[in-house]
Image (cartoon, rainbow, N blue to C red):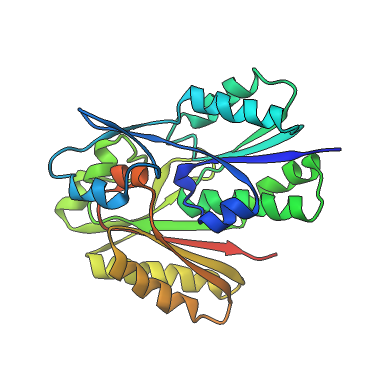
Length: 283
């Protein structure tokens, strides 16, 4: 009899009720300041990160190998036979390889690691769908076969107030930087499904136009697809709520969740002003 565990990381921004419902094991990124190290979503808030960016821009690190090892040992002790891990895009971080190395030390658990090539609730919705499949009685192999198709139904876009923090954190990808900022051009950023790196999906001049363009992009998808909606933000509560309220009334939205603030570690790399839109296509 298969007993399947689900593993993801703190950047997935999953609500606590979903984590508990599907018993998802959470690995936590680390946020590193000169004089102190924090554990993402454990002993630091997004507000702390944003409020202190003028003093120091911290660095981040993947969850510790010790934490990963602890999770796998606990799974063994609890009789799990299989594990599915969904990670933050490997084009942005090394967590995929970290879990792979640790899982190889635990051959008793057959582990499948999926690179979400996404961030935040884009990553989170994939692991949530895996939880639903387990609940329906799907086997490990059936779920593994379905995950790539789940990823194809995911649409994620975001805009930031400044590209400064993406550049400093080395996460700029294929998004144009300095010249665009000088001209007040705001790129609508998405993630390349091939390499998992950021790229410019569209661009407009000015903050207000960029938010309106995001709504337009969402409405274009919703013309032909019924979707679940999620909006997240990084120190941009008012702008994100406006977008959420505008899109949730569309007749092709089947359910909507205001995801709220990004994980603190995501705030390190986005800086203040991020508004993120996730539309997940229903089958």
